[in-house]
Image (cartoon, rainbow, N blue to C red; front, side, top):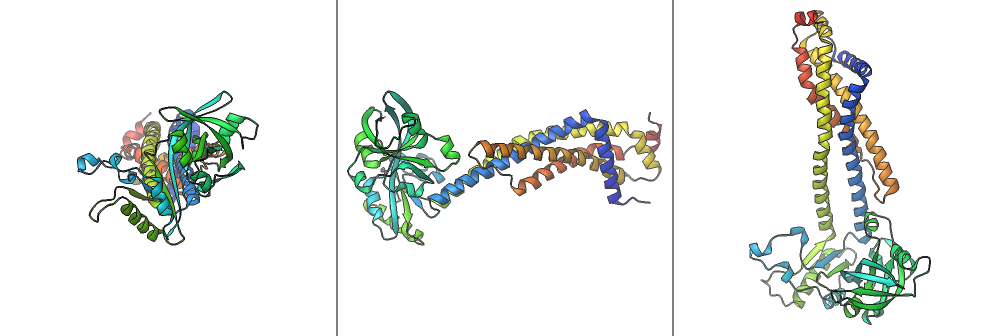
Length: 420
């Protein structure tokens, strides 16, 4: 009489648990290999989910409909020389006058001109090198997640007058001024290849919202862009314009900006744009592509742990088949079919790897909680990662358990009964 599959499943689970208890060390090593592989998959999923959440929050706070005018489109990087196109580095730099004209367009709410450079800051002999600095139009804090711990932003009039003012990050203020309130105090700023140095007055201390970027770059400063150009000789080689369209007028704003840029640069109808428009959704798409590639690479690397666990499954199941040869012979003698024997051992190997998967899930969850507690990354395990990890563990057990199960099902009952 053929045994019901559920009965065979129950028996297989019971036998697997008995086998694990009887061989704790051997089974534990196999479970450990699977647990490491699954734990890494779960941990990577939690990290990627947390990083993506932080980045998406940043885009949302900066304005999902905003877009930029840049010197080249880095979402479609190509070798311009080989394609016969003008190299992007030969394109005209983005000038502040272009930003001023764009700001007056009907569909544009704001146009923020900006560029980055590096500075050295000093206060009474205390020096901080490599400060990431930005020359900006006024109004930039409206599109940066964070608040002023003290002080304020510079005004449009102060930008136009090239006033020597600076807004610094909270960690930089603490590094340079300690417990003193830096607002109203002066610092010596040095920048450029010619080491141009001048005194600037701190007018604000900005504290960004906690995210992965704020943790990576603690020392930064924002200058009025005209002061940065005039007083520090900062380069505008990679300057761009961050544009805020009026509500529901994003497409119109893009068309108007393109028309304005082409007109200012004297481009004829057949001439290609010698600038690029970069939308927020394009940046999101680039980021998602990068994250996807990164996840696939890390998934492939973490599969090594599952491979080790799978090899362990083959070994332990082969030993189990050898040790239970006489048992297999008895079962066949009383009517068990090859399919039932094979099913039993597949269930046993799947249970072994499932236990490893559960242990790996617990390990990954613990690591994710640690990352979320001690870093700015809000690492959380997505639901799909739980099911994927468990499925990977079970599939590993089944795939690597096929050979031992097939060997068990092919044993001759008479030979098996004679086995000692």
